[in-house]
Length: 147
Image 1 (cartoon, rainbow, N blue to C red):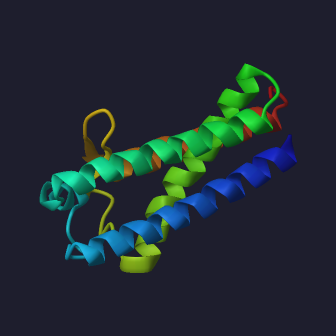
Image 2 (cartoon, one colour):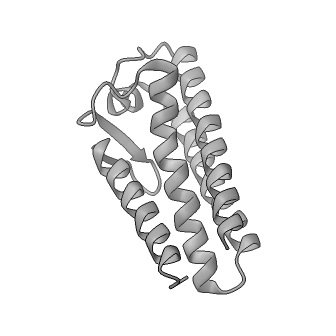
């Protein structure tokens, strides 16, 4: 199981960087300042692009579900693999954005976490905290041989 967790983490990190790069390009193409809040950015997005963004979000979740489904053997294992990969993806998405454009400037910066089914808006520390806690919890469960 260690190798599966390792490669799922690598997959999540790679996906996170890819998504971070896409967001950098979107901001540039739409004239959104790098220091601007994503909440402000979404308010500036033309409606058509918001709908396109929603399909990108759905595709991201589908990819995470698919890789977890393929990697796991039981539904519990598939669920754990989904949460593990999602957590790495989410955590490293913010790290990637910070490395690329120094965004978010602080953990208190307000972000649009998801657009589906409606915009989820919260400070960046919330998804970073939840993802970190998820990774630590699954790693500890693995280390004490519960998984």
